Every structure is written in structure tokens, then in C-alpha cells.
Image (cartoon, rainbow, N blue to C red; front, side):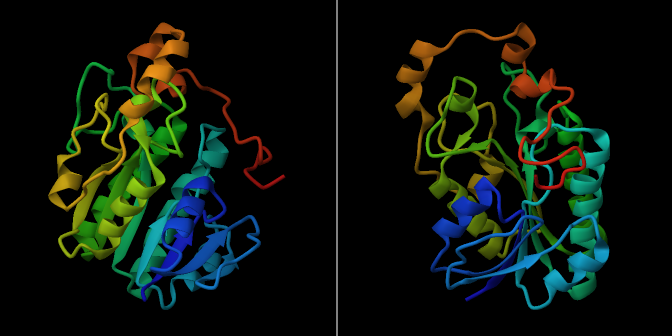
Length: 271
């Protein structure tokens, strides 16, 4: 059974993966927040990813890294810089030093959020971030490319839409990713020997998708869930938002300024 380092393990996406992979992998969980109720296949190590000396020990003995850690919404630049940019660099560099070859990086649809909704893009689309948060994800994609090309690491960057049990609104009919489709996509990133330097989209089989996910399909991804099953009920309640929000794929992030995670203080620490 492979041992995986899962950063940002207290977050919602990580919780989905922990549940879906409960009998498939051993997890070393890491976050700055404590995690209670560990399963038999889990251990927890608290770490601040912005501190290199706390990141390096996380890598010992793991087969791959799933890097979810960081500030998960728009926020002040100082917070984004430390949590998402410095922290991301520290994860890649620690993995390189220890010899962990494979990293799955959770990038985001917000790295390409300023593409219009009437344009369909694929994995070759260059970043057009909609926020400081999106900039940090574009940085992670570029960093992953550097480590793949320069050091021969195997990098699998997932431009994740929105992970939830069901889509919540009109925009998420296009970007929704179910937990079981997330698990399938991540398992490909862990197991597929063809992965060298990949960008794929984290999206289910959505008829309204803005993304051509042929690169994920090339690697074996076959999503099982469809947002269209929820479309009628969602569209019956939808009211148009700000014209910019309705125009661009990033939604409200194209207007977001202060942002911030209500569970953390201004420095990104848990309240």
C-alpha cells in the first residue's frame, strides 16, 4: 500500500479524498490545523508549509505528494505569498531533496478565470488568473513545469473546478467535480506511469463544461457523474449576477479584492 503525503489535509477536498481512499492508501496528513478522529490508515504531522524546516521531514518515506495546502480563497497578498507561493516552493524543493518523484498539485480554475465563458479551453491554455489566489496557482503550475523539466520529477497539475456532493448554482453546472470523480482523477495522477508533466481539469462529465479535458481522458479519466442531472432545479432559481461575473469563467473572483477565509485571521492562521 503506497504512502501519500496529503497537505492541506484539514480542508474539504482532502476530506473527500480521505474518505474515498480509506482502504487504498496510507496517508500522512499535514496541516497547520489539528485533525481529530484519524482513521487506521492515517497519521498526522502538523506543519506550516511556509517554513522549510517543517516541510522537509514530511517527505521521508512517502511515495507521492498530493499538495492541497495553502490559502484556498482570495486574500491579502502577504497571506497568499506565504501560504501559496512560498509554501508551494517549499513542498516541491523538499520533495526534490528527499527524492520523492511524483507530485500532484491542486491548481485551480481561477488560474484561468479571465477566459470568457463562451470560449472552450484545454490544458494548453496559458494562465489568465482572476485574482491573487489565481496568480498563486499559475505560479504553482510554472514551478511544477520547472521541476519536471529540470529535475525529472513527475508533476500532475489538476485545475480543479468545484468539489462538492452536487453543484450549487449555475456556474458550478460547468465546473462541478463529484467526490468519486475527484478520486478517480487523483488515482490516475498517483498510479499512471505516463505522467511526466501534465495539466488536467478537475471536472465531472458536465454538458456545460468550459474545458476540453482530453488530456485527462488520454491518461484514462472516465468521469461517472454529470451536473446536468441537477440543471433544471438550479436554473429555475438562478438570477443573473454582475455582467462581469456572468461573462468570465472565474465568477465572483474577477471582482474579489479583500476576500479571506472566515476560519483564519489576517495572517492566515486558524482562529
